[in-house]
Length: 69
Image (cartoon, rainbow, N blue to C red; front, side):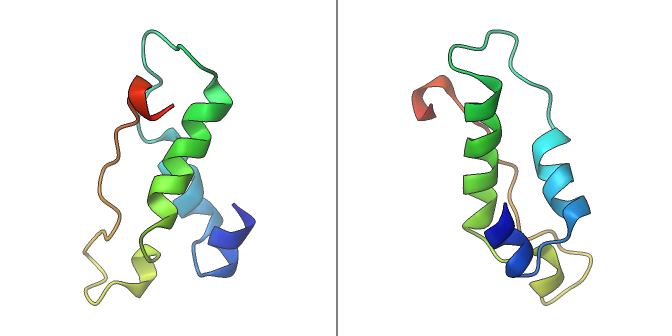
């Protein structure tokens, strides 16, 4: 998370990545693993403020599957 903040992500954007989707009904790993996977997937993209069009969201909706954890 620190690396995301250092590269231009705002705390609100990071919070949104973690909380924008509910947790799965059945968690086979841990909530920490799900949060880490969401942050890792989002960090592969530039922060939304770096998008050419401010109304465009650069970060795609990422779905963490059990296979990814």
